[in-house]
Image (cartoon, rainbow, N blue to C red; front, side, top):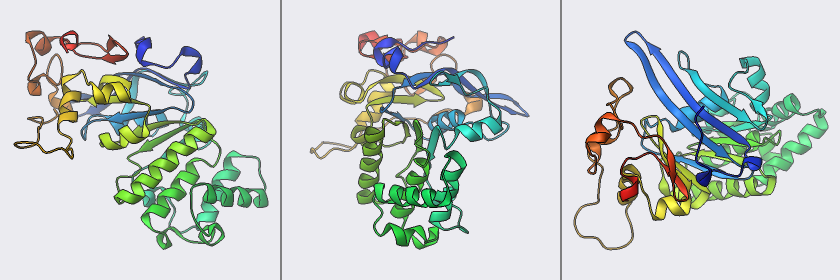
Length: 333
């Protein structure tokens, strides 16, 4: 079983979510595609772990695998997922339905995909609360209103009776966050929760998520392609490339002093307010398709520092100071 270096992971007693060697495969007529390979990480209560990388890196797929919401024929083909002292990757769909909502909440990119357009906001909140908590109709309504106020929705009584289409995008996303918190889950999986929102609303929603995690001790797995979001919200960050974690550590360490060439490329491509000469840095090439993954390190065709070993051997995630990195050239960084 794969293990994660202790230097980049919370203490053993404080690990709420433990993912070990997670492998996701997608069978096709041309063979089996490897979508996630040996994904290993931990999240502590109250901690925000960000997942960042290009589209197709496997960030959202990691969250869906934890939630038990992989789209068939994709399936977990190996590894383990533990929530507290309970292994959840082996649970049936019926058992996972009780875990989702009660122990794990979810916030997705498009709130309209998470809300029923035919039901009022109050009906949806009440239904979720009564499904997971032993509360009556009046108590559920009171908790729904309390949650709407907690996520910053003004005139909660009015919004309680509104339908999703009557709310703005920012308001709808706040409702989705309230839904995710209905049963006081121990973990929230937030998949690009602010991508569809304008910048000012993004900042408000991210601050809200961070505050709620801190107030309730709820852990969060935050999936995003935006390093700015990671810098503002996360405690630690995992950088993904082609279905693998290539670097993981504290936000301060990874952003200020990235080690893996891919992480350095991502950081160099971020515009700054400082005057620069010439064009912005970029990472040449594109991420490989699942059916055309190169041998060795998947990043070597785009890596300016690749050596012969990178073409043939895949380095495993290993301790490098206060972080973990999967690169043969890490010691020279």
